[in-house]
Image 1 (spheres, rainbow, N blue to C red):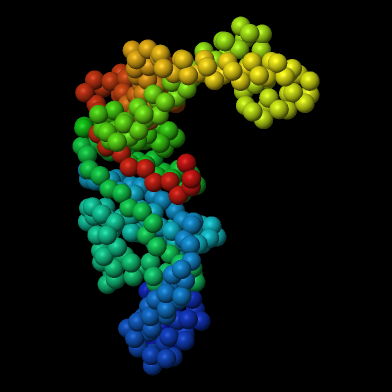
Image 2 (cartoon, rainbow, N blue to C red):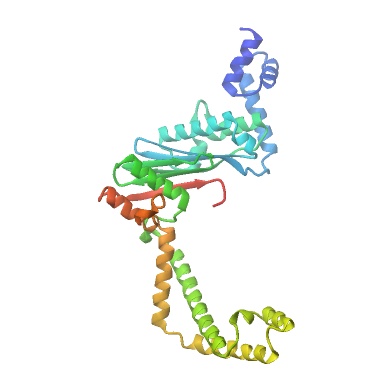
Length: 330
């Protein structure tokens, strides 16, 4: 076999450039295995030099097969490399291998071997070829009798969703697309962590009290003939005095009203009212963040939640889990 043919073969095996393959073959005395090892070692050295770099770009793909679904996110430094054919091919290849083996965790995937190398080594090898830092950015997996996948056109966002049974693929896909756009935190409110509910309750109570006190103060100011918008902060009071929009007497009166009415109202807020308004705020939080309580966004005219949309198509169909990976900020 000629050197040119060996270079082509080594390039096919490693994905390295022509010059790197030729150099490795010459240094190895035309030993194909030694040449492959030289390229692997050089890739490791290049990757090590870039370890402190930020891998802020990349791609994310989801896929499902045989009751198992997964998302692989492969990251790199630049958008140029993230759109490279070899980079995308590696991400999809890793995803296919993960599906075949039904790999459950990211740590397991990094150590998973195929074609004589671990996933981490395959990534390092391509990193050495491109000269950019690369890493497995994320990996999610789930199982279900029914599965749906959504991959956004920009290759930056992927969703997998599991259902209690197989259903109409179009219906399942609609749910996956809802997850992609609305970014819920749980399938049902029962699955929302208690710590999250406690924090939202605390914020809701504080917000409700603040609003009730502010309402009472503004009513008292209006009855005194003072525009609440002119005295809603010390800076505004000073500014409006300077402009002649307030008299000093009005400013002093406003400060007194704000102090006394706020204290009196805060001390006499009806507990039942506070709890009732807080409950309403929590329900709004659930409708915005719990998948089955979110409005079905694809057809808002139907005025259905996702839970109702599923029940409308199949009374027994339930979404039981989902995973979402977005390489862009939500």
